Image (tube, rainbow, N blue to C red):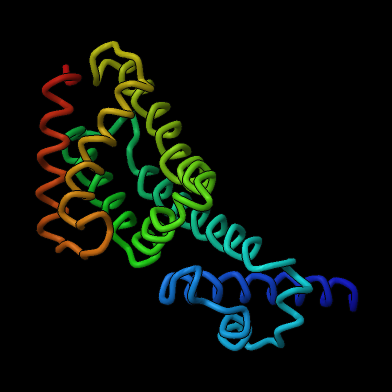
Amino acid sequence: MTGAATGRGRIDKRRAILEAAFAVFAERGYAQACVQEIADAAGVAKPTVYNHLNDKETLLRHAMETAADTVGAECLRALARLRDDVADLEAALRDCAVRMLKVCNSPRARALRSLTYAQLGTLPDLADLVQDRTSGRLAEALADRLARLALSGRLRSCDPAVAAEQLLALLTGPLEARTRLGTRKVTSAELEAISAAAVATFLAAYGN
């Protein structure tokens, strides 16, 4: 019992460190942030941070990985409402689209994009890490949903991976433009308008 409690405490402490690190990096930037600030924000001693994560770069990588997993999971939950037996496909697509855009427009997602862009020159592989855990996983899950809709006759026969890529592009392209690459938070009305236009264009190409 003591061992389990100790293990749980270590996991919780590591999670607190990573959450604090992401918040500090998002606010201060990687170059300006220091490990002591992160330790203070997490409520631990500075050596404890190094005990869990070897150095500042490792801290950044794991913090961004954790944030990307959270954003990716939230997007997948938004997609879960899209089933092949929905009565109103357009309404269901718009509902899922709005929910996904709200995740992408959340403070965590915007901070994640900002940190990713900022490190492209020095740590370009972070972009692959973030993309794989967010849009990559979402694209795969969306392709599966679209394939089921095509098999049930709700959509035209198509390459579901291409269809998913195009629908996501119709959503994320306007979002990036309106948020100024993640630096501006858009309104719910704007998200609704982006979703409605994207779904209308998608169904014009793939709807039955």
